[in-house]
Length: 421
Image (cartoon, rainbow, N blue to C red; front, top):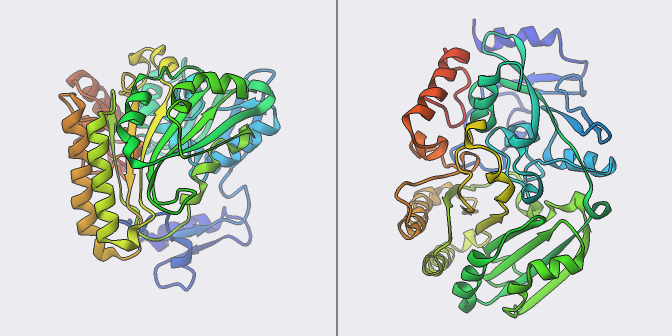
């Protein structure tokens, strides 16, 4: 039976107004446009849902009992809005437009992780559909080994339909603090070393960015600070950075539901947006300088890529390291920084030059890191990295993941995203 024949089954369960489109249908392309067209997969069909019952995105927050239910259709931004309305904090990803459950399955970095650890450490249970079509649960008492694999390599074992996670009372009544600082490039080494030396305590997170989208319209070094707490406590926590005298600085109290808003401007769909990333224990100041030169050179050679960015994600990992390594498949609790680069342009003719640039980006950081083995957070991986760079080193760890893959997905049906092999 071909794909069209198989999907006829869905016609009986989709609501009135829902539709299934195939290549060649007028509405097919508009409904498959992606955030990035770079190396995009070619879907054989697209299902346009009409109601919440077609793909559930139900959100429920019970602060009194300390839990929230997130169904698979819910986006990160929707979860944060629901939590904010319930006077709660829920640990989900840092990009509002992606699925909350999908981001969680790789680990789930968050600007709140200095307070509560990463998303997977707040999972109470997961529900999923297996390769056999069974609906099952995974928790501390049910399918325990599967839960281990789902927490860090969860794209490999089934379709997660819902997550029950911890919910926490809001800090400072949901009013946090944010600040934007802009530095001239001659401060790169100083800024980098100060961030290396900064104690990332509870409430703190930093995006350290090379960007052309500075308030002044020229390439600059931008720090985007977030603090879950009061302005006075934030000033104390980030005092070493304020002492560097940025050329521009703006701070304000900000509601918790805007925690990811600073990244919204990069979430438009379409165009080429290849991405590379490296996970580090520390950022080498000289490497940061070399990376700045590398970044500028690409922008100068290719003006259409002027909106490209390099971001050093500096989140607190103290609470993350309080959770035992063996509790989850997520492998990188000992690392402090995750550096991402995304080149933004529209013409695929630049793809080859972009790939050369991306390889050099990784080389600059990896050679200066002092780490013997390369590492990358799976949610930020390009896809051409060896399996151990994404899922961790050690034969026992990899064997456990492969055994779970064989048990739960013997036909390899769930191998579309950084597959275990």
